[in-house]
Amino acid sequence: MSLPILMLAATAALATATPDDRYADKRAAMVATIADDIAKARPTTPLPGLKRVLAIVGAVPRERFVVPSGRAFAYVDMPQQIGFGQTISDPYIVTVMTAALDLPAGARVLDIGTGSGYQAAVLSPLAAAVSSIEIVAPLARQAKARLHHMGYRNIDVRSGDGFAGWPGHAPFDGIIVAAGASVIPQPLIDQLKPGGRMVIPIGPTTPQEQLLVVTKAADGTITRCSLGLAMFVPLTGRGQRPPDTHGLIDRTIPYCYGVAIT
Image (cartoon, rainbow, N blue to C red):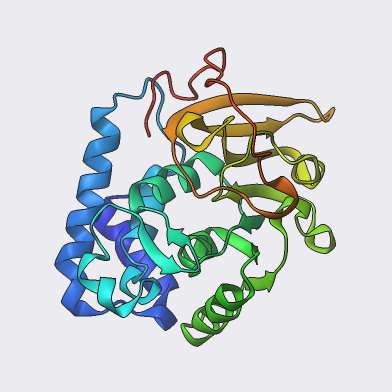
């Protein structure tokens, strides 16, 4: 199926969150740039479901997830401040993280770090249910109201510590974590289904992070591969890095697609 047809399908799926036509050209240009940048990285194997994710990213009205003063830059490939020291991830990273999850049909997904709700909105057409956790209570309330108003009915948002996951909604086919940590939280591994994947930035410090895809085998063991370097806001709560943590990136972790794509 061609990308334009996929974009029409995604737009139909998100009919209750109709994008503003004033941003149509910017959305299309953003999607084309993301696709081009991924191609330029020359991955040795294709990202699963990339075309479908690009179609969704091209249909979600990102201007609704940034502060009003930032709407002119909503489709520039960069993170933006959303208040309370938090950011909305840049569209390229959202696309890569979502595609790397390779979600099955009818997936249950956990989104750690709701922020303004943009990542949850991108996950919505790919999943039966999206559970999203935000540690900053006012952001959680705003995101929940925003997503409900926009018509997303398969997203559940609550305020809480993402380190603990959401046991009542587990197990999950996929988990996305939009905050950096020094180690992968064990509760999230425990809540991942066998065969499921987690995408999470891991490193001893923020400048030494890499974006990992963690896959859980049937026997509970995990394997890791890297999408490349990343810099995220730090995970807070129980998963917060100790202040004296230091070290270098683990270069022994292989790249998921043969090369770094972040």
